[in-house]
Amino acid sequence: MLHVTKTTIIKPAESMPKKLAKKLLGEILQEAGLVSAAQIQIALQDQGIYDDMRIGEILALRGWLKQETADFFAERFPALVKQPNKKPLGVYLKEAALLDDHQIRILLAEQQKNPTPRIRFGKLVVLKGWLKQDTVDFFLDNLAARAEQDKVYISQTVLKTLTNHPFPNK
Image (tube, rainbow, N blue to C red; front, top):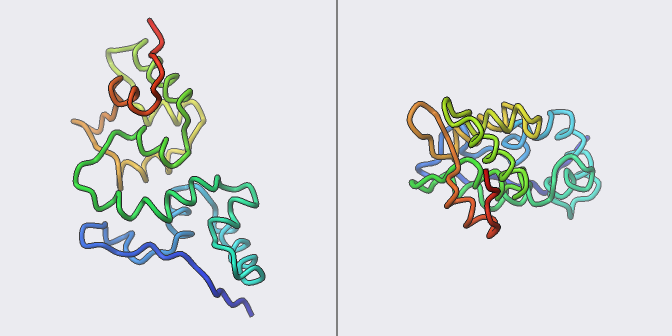
């Protein structure tokens, strides 16, 4: 019989979407498309053996998730969901260690190549194969600011604050 002695629970907040309130970290990571149900089951079995380890640590040790990503969802995500002022999608994807500065610059340059009609940032991430559509949708539904008609872009100003690197010239 499997006994789980230590789990990470996302604490509910008044403004947190009801569907996320009281969910376990593994459930949220699965909903975000970052891990599978089978991976969570294996991690829970491991946690029964190594009861001093958190599920995010186990997922990271197995190479299924970056430790920074697990930490983001366990520590930062609940507070970010409560914040009324949302940021562009790329800010959160970078903070969750799902994209790096170089990838963000590539996506912005790609957007600038075809200014009309501009391809959505999240769509480009999926087209490049860097994230699943489920993951982008999860961030859009729960964290990111949505511009008119769901068009989410990162401005060069926001990118400068993230990277402190100059932008590529056209």
